Amino acid sequence: MSATSDTTRKPRTTRAVPPRASSRRPARPSSLTERVYALLRAEILTCELEPGRELSEAELAERFQVSKTPVREALATLRSEGFVRTFPRRGYQVVPITFGDMNQLFELRTILEAGAAELACARITEAELAQLNTLADVVYDRQEQPSLKRFIKANRDFHVAIARASGNERLYLQLERIIDELERFFYLGARLRDVNDETKDDHHRIVEILRSRDPEAARAIIARHNELTRQGLVQQFASARIGSAMTGISFGRE
Image (cartoon, rainbow, N blue to C red; front, side, top):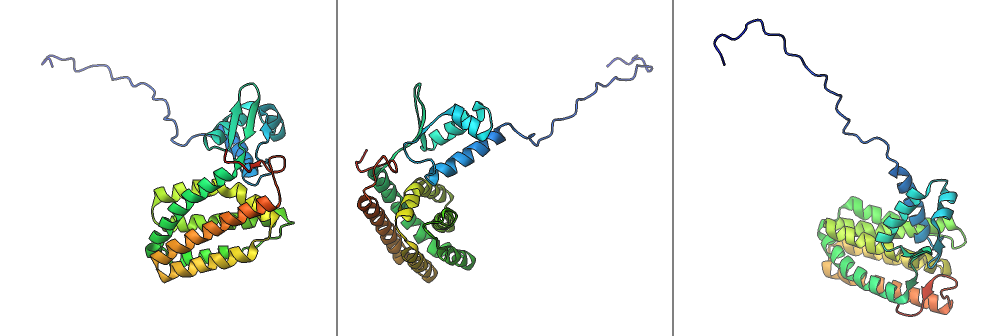
């Protein structure tokens, strides 16, 4: 710096700094996507949109009073989750379900859930055990759709709570996804036959074994419970002679 610098320098000018954008996102257009996604997913899981049902972007947009964009985005998410599939120039279809699908999902669920129950024996709290007993008490009337929905949700929440009590986040997330994929089978099965007593009794037995902190017994009862549930569903579907025309379930493995 020069020793003869001007002591009467002009004051430094400052540029106006634009206000910093808020770190909070404004309301996003995708909130419409999320709403359409949630509604469609719920209708698929409860079989209100039955397996094999064809879907049209235009019809869904009209029904939900939105443009095609949020419908398309919601369907793309459902496609990534395995609930819908696309056909060139035909649109979308709710993915059909088969006994092969059900058997594979139950096999995977049992492997993971038995491990989750074993871990939960060492980690589950009294508050979580009390919550499980409350969920186990929920029953339904086959003729009342709202009570059926409450029952299926309570059944889902019961098993998801065991997965969460394992303390293993990855295991919990994997089990939650598999349980959701099986939900369509549970809705169809519970509509065909009253499973209140057997479900309630079995769930309370599971809670008592978790309370006893016996990991081997916990693995065994989860495996038994899932296998009895799977067998019951197979028998219900077969005895009712339901096929693709009624529910979208195929008796084949594909």
